[in-house]
Amino acid sequence: MIKEALQFFSHHLKRNTSPHSTTLNKYLHCLSRSSCSDLSLKLLLYFISKGYTPHPFSVNSVISYLCNLGHLNSAQNLANSLFRLGFSLDIVTYTALIDGHLRNSDVANACLTMKEIVCNDNIVPDVVTFNVLFRRFSKDGMVKELLAYMSLMWKVCMPNDVTYCNLIDMYCKMGDLDMGLRVFKDMTKGGVLPKFLVFTSLIDAYCRVGDLEVAFNLYKDMHACSVLPNVVTYVALIDGFCKQGMLQRAEHLFRKMLKDGLLPNSVVYTLIIDGHFKRGNVDRALEYLSEMLARGIRLDIVTYGALIQGLCAGNKLESAVEVKEHMVKNRLAPDNIIFSTLMRAYFKAGNLKAALDEYKESLAQGFEPDIVTLTTLIDGLCKHGHLNEAKGHFSKSKANEVVYSALIDGMCKEGEFSQVQMLCKDMAEAGIVPDKYIYTSWIAGLCKQGDLVEAFRLKNKMIKEGIIPDLLTYSSLIFGLTNKGLMIEAKQVFNDMLEKGITPDYVVYDILVRGYTVQDDTVRISQLQDEMTKRGLIKETTDVDIRKL
Image 1 (tube, helix red, strand yellow):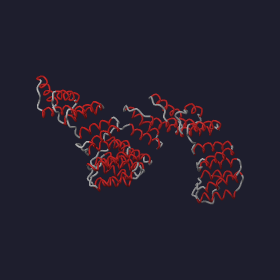
Image 2 (cartoon, rainbow, N blue to C red):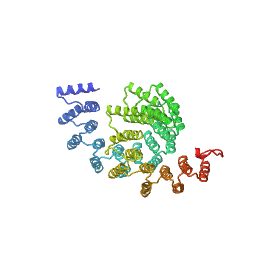
Image 3 (cartoon, rainbow, N blue to C red):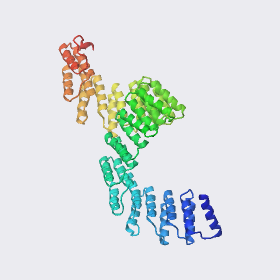
Image 4 (tube, rainbow, N blue to C red):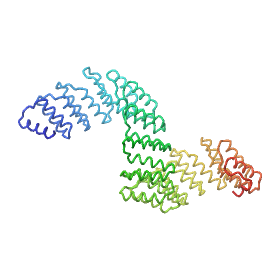
C-alpha cells in the first residue's frame, strides 16, 4: 500500500496535475499511519498551497504524528493555519493536541485546549477526549481536576469502562480502596460492564494491602461477568496469598490458571517457589523449580535470587553456591542482593574469608555497596571480632539506623562506649533517632562491664523517649544486677518486667537461678522452678535440680 501511495504522488508531482481529493486523502492517510509521516506532512502542505482542501482524516493523522514526536508548536501552528484557511477542526484534532500536551507533561495547556473546545459551540467533547485527560489526572493523582472534569463530562456524554478504569486506578494508587470499590459498584449499577483492567487494578490493590478476601471475591466476580483473568491477575492473587503464607490457596489458583489454559511465566513460578522457601518447604520449592525447567521457562535474576535466598535460609549454603555458579554459566551476572545474601550466609556459617570474597567480587562487578550490603558487611565483621575493619567500611553519608545499629552493637560488645556516644551524636545530627535495638545493645554492653548506673540511666532515657524496653533489655539489666550479687534488685526488675506484660523465657530464669545459686538460696530456686514448670519452660519433675540446668 505504501509503494502504491508513493507511486501515486510521484505521478502527480511529475505531471503537476491535481489528483482526485478522495484518492489523495486515502494515500495521505496511508503515509501518516506508516513510517512516512514526515513525507505525508510535506505533501499535505504542498497540496494545501495548491488550493487543495484536506480531509479531516489526513489532517488529524499529520497532527497526531507531530504530537507524537513532541513537536507541539508545529502541530498547533498547522491547526491554526488550517483554521485561518477555513478548514474546520473537529474533536479528533483537538483530542490529538490535548494528548500531545499531556505527553509533554504540559497539563496546563492541555486544560486550556479543553477550555477552547467547551467554548466552541460547533464542537462537543466526546468520551475519548475526556479519557485522555483522565488518564493523566489518574497518573498524577489529580483528584480535584478529575472530578471537576467528570462533572462537565456528565453534561455532554456518558462515561465508559475506560473512564471508570482511570478513576478506579487513581483511587487504588492513592490507597483509597474504599472509594475505588465504591466507583466500581456505581459503574456496575450504571450498566457499564467492567473489563479486565478494572478488575485487575482493584484485585492488585487489595492484594497489596493484604485484604485477600475482597480480592478473591473480585476474582469470582470476573467470571460472573464473563471477564477472563489473565496471567497478570493470577500473579497479583498468587503473590498476595504467598505473602500471607497461604500456599494452599496460592497453589489452588496456580492449578486453576493451568485449567484456564494460561501458561505460567517465571514470575508465577518464582512467587510460589519463594513462598515455599519462606515456609521452610525446601523440597516443595525445588519440585516447582523442576516443573518450571521442564516447561522450558528460563530462570531470570529474580528467580535465581529467590532460590539462593531460600537455600541460604534453609542452611543449604553449598546448594546456593551451586545455583550461583549455574547462573554465571548461563551468562547471567549476580546482582547486589545475591552477593549480600551469600555474604550473610557465609558470615553465619563462620566462613569470614568466603564472605569477604563475595564482597570483593561484587565490587569487581562494578556494584556500589548499598545499605543492605554495608549492614551485612559491618554486622558480620563485628560478630567475628573485626571491629576496626568494620569501622573502616562505615560511611556517614550512606548510613541509616540499621547500619548504625550494627556498628554500635559491635562497639558495645567491645566496651567502646565513648565511641558509641560519638556515633549517637552523629545519628542525632543526621536526624536519626536511636531505636530499641541500639539502646538494648548499649545497655547490655554496660551491664557486661558492670556499669549499672549508666545502664539504668539509659533505660530511663529510652522510656522517656517513648521506646518500650523488651525482654532482652530487662534480661541484660537482670544479668548485670545478678553479677553484682544484687538479687533483691534483680528480682524487682524481673517483677517490673512481668507487670509490663512481658513474658519471660528460659534465659532470664536461668540468669536468676544462677544468681540465687551463688547465694545458695534454695527456696528462691524452687519457686523459680515451679514458675518455669507452669510456663512450660521445663518438664514437671521432682528429680531434677534446676541448678544443673
